[in-house]
Length: 197
Image (tube, rainbow, N blue to C red; front, side, top):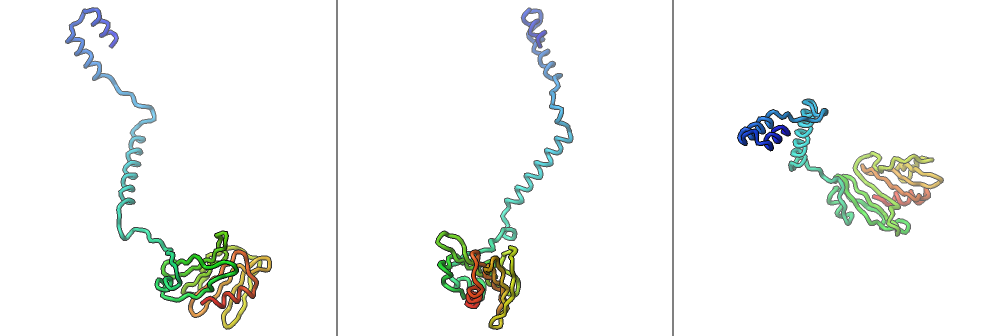
């Protein structure tokens, strides 16, 4: 290119010959790619793009059969919970200084009532569901586990430091759990469990 420009400057070559030489030089020029860009790399990048686009299409496609359903539904009253589950739930209006403030139904099967203290912390959770499984969702290890029979019902009591934190029992084809973070005495735990239906 420098030689052609130099010759042009010297007026030794006709302008049409200079233009033809410049076009020929552009055709012969080879584009240099970075050393890492080889056929395997290009193929891998193309495959990744195809997969990404395909997944994007599949995941954004709206299909009623594949839409996720929220298994938890908050309700206001135990009557609303009964409409969803098909069974009644009787719980005390208050526990210690707290009142029931949150009520949920899971998958139309299990009812959960939370009692919240003045700080907004859950101090007691009561659950009920058909069957005889442990429905507490509490997998903590406790220092002590006792089984006590009272009024024809067997209660499993779990706790630490002389307090009861978890009560499990079945009655009339339903499982119950009473989970109390601050803890209760055995008498309080049994009295509370007896009130729950």
